[in-house]
Length: 237
Image (cartoon, rainbow, N blue to C red; front, side, top):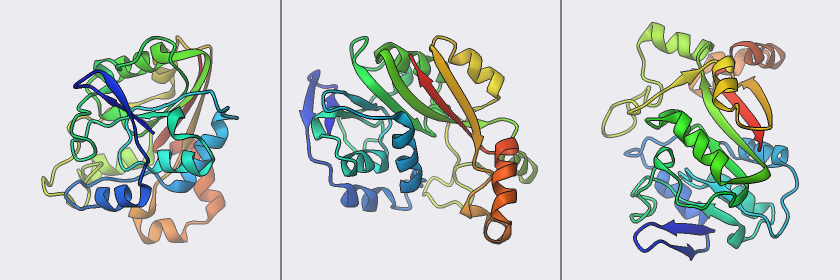
């Protein structure tokens, strides 16, 4: 995996120790919610064939679930460009994708972000930056929160934070920025892209306890398409 070093404007090739990173980022003081490995696998397959000379951008690495799954798919370390704003991940990578990615135009064949851009101060700027660094024909996936979802309605009704419902981190606070969007809003925000496919998914997760366990799966998937919490955006430049 290639990490961008902002201090000396250079890249650093490292081997990714997935299990160690996952263990570290599961610590309660971070309050991190990891991308399920099955979800990462699904996204990679939807992106299509990744050739050996193609480059992939993961601008918000977190615990590295997506990167680990890419390596399992046989993608080379030198193809994956990744960084994260969290100083616990890499102290010299304090950067935010909505302030401008540190890469030239038309640098990548693929880009991915799962549930991060809606936590940045300027989501539109982040989307525009991903567009800028993608090559013509480049593909990507971004997950953003759905404004008209069952999960949002329940959180508003109960006045519960979205990212820290059970006060599992030391700050006992929610994320600093949380934006939700409609499909029509995202169509406008992604208007520069040549192809766009937006799917409503994920009605609610295991955090709902017994409700999640006992609802029939067919009903769950049907309602997910109408009132899901995730807007899964697949795009091509």
